[in-house]
Amino acid sequence: MANSTSEGVSDAELTPVYAEFGAAVHDAQVLEFGLILLMALATRYDQAHFPEGPRESLSPARIGKTLGQLFFAVREKEYFTKAEKKMIFKAIRKRNDLIHGYMVDRVHDLLTADGRQFLLEDIRRTRKALQDADRVNASLIDRYLQDYGTSLDEVEAQARAAMQQEDEPEAD
Image (cartoon, rainbow, N blue to C red; front, side, top):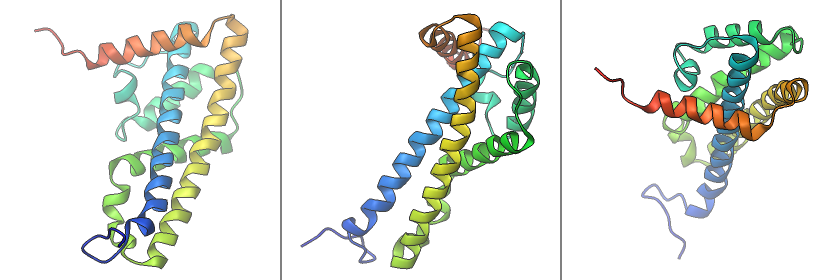
């Protein structure tokens, strides 16, 4: 007998939704880390300043200001169209929704076949938005790497150090 929840929905019926959700969370983390890398590059080469730290700068309360600062700092490296900026803003909002409550807010949809199908389609749309935004972001990261002859390893080390510093408690 297949395992099932108390509502009678089998694990086999839930697995595709949870698998797609897990993949979407991965896509969200890839976009987030890419933006943190871009922030590190803009800080290093264009004197951008993100005083809240990388993770806090991407929080729902600060994301608008952060992306505005980021787009301003990188404007001479690569021109972002209005549509690309809007795409990145929307992808970050989708990322925040996905991470901070997507499944909780839609748990009732797991209980029906139509609901599960809706979730699969919605999560796939979210994944596409995240991946499209990451491609735009990655092109700018590549441009920085090429223009400054730096390596991704070097920039990742800088970004990780900034995130680690953000995690450390402040001394009194």
